Image (cartoon, rainbow, N blue to C red):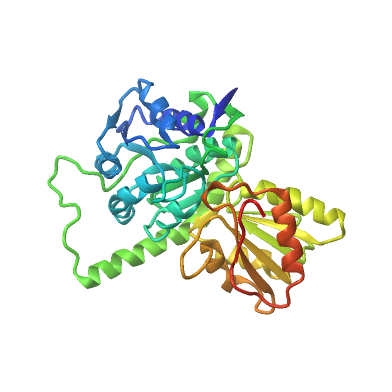
Length: 387
């Protein structure tokens, strides 16, 4: 194990390189890549390294990048790509194809605002638009978590009980271009943690049709299988956490991460780097005698509904901070968890940090005061960064 000062983009690339080499005695590694700000330096790092029994294919579009990964994965190779924002939108057809094929592809997605108008800063709307694509979605808070989650994602995706692709999501610039000290294990450690991929339905010399026409009852069967695979994810994730801790001496975060929630009357729900700001505001609120707590949604797909319901069961006020927008609804996270809260609780949505605006402790402090004063929820509150 060694420690390096690297960005989250490089952390994702370094973890992928280690995972790729861990499959050198099996079917190797394949990656389709296309640049888009702010993930470009991840694939630049990947392209600069000679991976034994591996190939990084530079293509002309994000759609093709995922197409390369689909082909590589169907051949039994370990696969990776990265994208962001409108690149993910252009890739969407093949994102769904990879999900419905049940291919264990890992993709690093840098959360960036969808355009036009063009904006290169953080917003979770790009990956959340793909929430129904059949991919596991994990949202990271810091660089170490990006590195660890990338390694963990391969172990999770390639488990025979799962066989689903994984998005490892990180906030644009707040993480992607920020340098932090990051522990990077040796290749031997990764080899022991990450088994060689043996994909049972890979293509061989025996003729086989992939993506043929489904009749209605066949599609129903495939969707049910997908549902059952998603149901396996939380338990398998816990197993992988345990194995990761044994291998590297640190434990990846739970699917739902709580902070000072044991006696909380007010809960602030968030995703990604916002959670660190929430913790600071919670501490300040506690110092004033307000029983506030933080809840970070790390796993958004599959949504750990039972865990969320248990965590929020005793809260009288729940504020959901969404760094995204579903026009006509409000925040996407709020829309999905509001039905999991105690029916007598006030569940208020706050739209904050859209387009990369700062989310500061004073913003969360205002939210705590606002939700504490409410007798009932209202329309989603749209907050500008300057407020």
